Image (tube, rainbow, N blue to C red; front, side, top):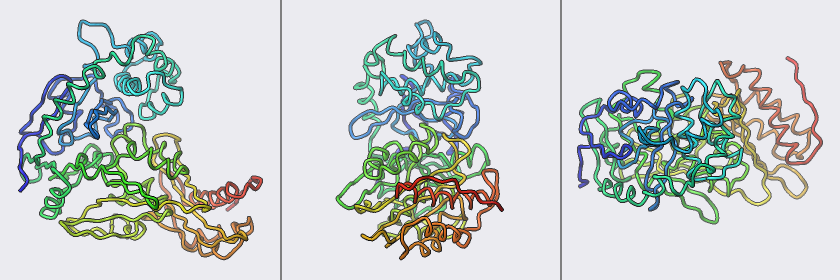
Length: 488
C-alpha cells in the first residue's frame, strides 16, 4: 500500500514550506501575494497570457535540477510538491546591489510603467542561466509569453544580450548553490502520496502512475491537473468548482520518452518544452508549430497528453498527430487499451474515455521515407495565440506521381479535430497536380461546416483550408506560386 503524507512540501526562495491546509484551487500567485506578501509577481490577465506573474520553478529531472519560467496565476500550489519556487524577491537582497538582469534592464531603459517588468526579468533570468550569450531570436522566444505595452521590446532585447557583461552566469546563486538545492529537493521527494483536505477541496498528488490509476479508478469524478494551462482558467476565469483535484504533473512514469526505429512514444506528462528536441528531430516539419504553442511559460507547463485529453477542437497538437497516425494508450486501474487518436474525439466535449480512464502515453509512428508532411497554424497573432485553424497534410506518391494515400486533419474547423475524408478521397488515385488539388479543394465544404466566432468567420476558415492545400502542393512540387482568389 502506498504511504501517505498529509502535507505539501516545497522550497520558496531559501525557505522550506510545509503546508497541511491548502485549498485545492489556490493558485501560486494568490499564495505569494496574499499569504507570503511577495508582491513582485503581478496579476495582469489571470490566464497565463501576459507574463506579469512569471516566476521560476526548479524541478529534479533525470538527476539534474532544471529551472523553467511559469506563470504563477494558473499554477496551483498543489502542483508544487518537491519543487523550488524562485520569485523576483530572491534575485537580490534588500540592501544589496541589483541582480545583473535587473541592472541591465535599468541601464538599457527596458522598463517604463514597470508593471510587466518583474515577469520580464524572471523570463530573462531563466534565459541567462541556460544561454549566457543569447541571440536575438533566443531572446524573442524567451519573451513570447511576456506582454509589454510600453517599450516596443527593443531595449529589453538589448538588455538581455548585455547581461553577461555585468556578471558571469556561473556565479549566480542558482548556479553556484545548485548541488545544495538538489540535496534539499531530494530530501523532499520521499515517494509518498500527498493527500490534503476533504470533499470538493481535497487535493491529491500521486506517488506513481500505478498510484494514479488506483486513485482515479476509485474517484473518477476528480479533476486531473498537469500543466493547468487550460484547467487554470476554469478556476480563474470561469470560477468553476472543480475539486477534488489530482495533480499528475510530476508522476515520474508520465515523463518518459522512448524512441525506436519506427516510432516516438511520449508519456502523457511530457511538456512541450521537454518534447521539443525529440519531436523536432524526428518530425522537423513540426518545428515552427511547436515554437508557436503559447509562450515559453505555457510550453514549460503544458503537456502533449493534456492537449489531447481535454478534447478541445482547437488544440494545436491533435491535427498533426492525427495526420501522422498517432495512437494513445488509455488506462483504468491495471487495464489498458490503445486507440487511434482520430477515434478518441467523438463530439464537442465528448471523448472515448471511460470514467476513471486517463491518457497514459502517446505514440507517433515515424514518417516513412519519401512521404510528404506539413502542418500550418493560422492565428490572428503570430506568437502566443490560439489557432483560428490548424491544418496538417500528409501524402504518399507512387513512382509516377499519383497519390497513393492521403491524411489531412484540421482543428478549428469542426466540433472536434477531424480528418478531411472527402478531400482525401478526391486526391487518392489522381496525379499530384494543380488540377487535382483544385478539384479536391472543393470537397472541404463536404468535410467541414465551420462556425463563425471571434477568431474567424466560417467563410474565412473554408477559404484558408483550401489555400493551405494549395500551399502544400506548391511546397511539395516546387511549382511556381500563384495568387488564388475566391469571391463569394
